[in-house]
Image (cartoon, rainbow, N blue to C red; front, side):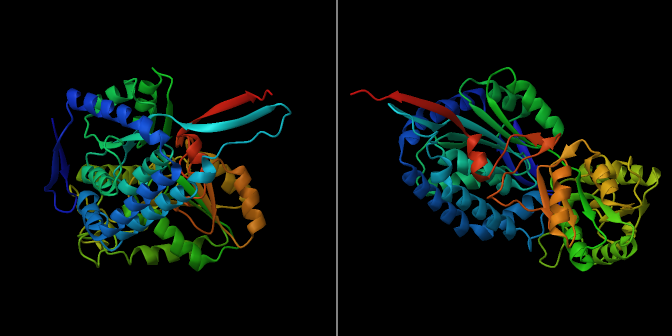
Length: 461
């Protein structure tokens, strides 16, 4: 079976790979199992040295990586280098905290005994990564899994297969022993077969809610851990005391960056009635400044969606929201490159979006956000929690105490004040409800890639 990558830039085949055969999958699993025990026994400092060299190799290829990212998934070239920087930030943070995160846990002294809890690697980690942030998503599990002493198999999206190969190239150049990191280009049925294989000990999946359910169903046939980073329909609240210019700039960027193709991108905007008019007016003015077009052009600030079908699906969602009563603020004709049947789609802001409309209920993976007026903090919190998703949420306010109190009430994995759409590698990346389960990044992320083993040693004389 052939796996083809159609570039959203111009619709041509950008890459083509042959899906791994059952024999190739079996051989990869055998190699991973055979290589992992020696890696587990290697000193943590030795693992860290190799992974730091991986970072150096990755950084050395930054220009080519950014260009490949643009051609595979359409991010404007002026923004593509930010993913290289973010990947390195996360990788180096997880390398740097490994010694403390993996250190033995001391439960306290007890006469006549030596007791501690040791974090041991799981064995083989199977990472299934999505295309929208192909390096940032994969690095969340690949680097800490290797640092913890696991072997890793990476199955990347058919849209971004070359990103997986960049990981392999850089890790090999860094001196990672053979078998510890391998790339598998797989069809869906073969992905399920790998999850079922007894040689796999953990699955780290990033993708749609439907994809997460499918992974969970297969993994439930075995007693293995699963990390699921799924969808979002993330809310923000602009309080009456917000710095409006700062809120407008950040919220527009958080909603439309990457053409809205972000699980933690902003989509539901709740604005206090006292600032609704100036806020929406400022957003519209800023949105109209985007330049939609060829993402290989450095002047482009809004690239295409990943494929034409995705853009047409977003158009249908927008129309459904308008039918329900939302008012479109942007005339698509203002963006000449936006055309039905192509992946090029104008940004849209839907005003006075009803609570039950598509834009306020479903994940829209495109440059679309809905705005709704609220009269109070309580009303804003009620609407923010009225969702099947819970990945991130944010508030814009000058009152830090109020922001923290509101954060206690909002059902979300990450709560922001006066910022959004950012993963701090020192903090746990986690979702609630249909946004997923498990955790990546921070010291907590290491807990999911290891298992605790208790040592209870009686000291005799």
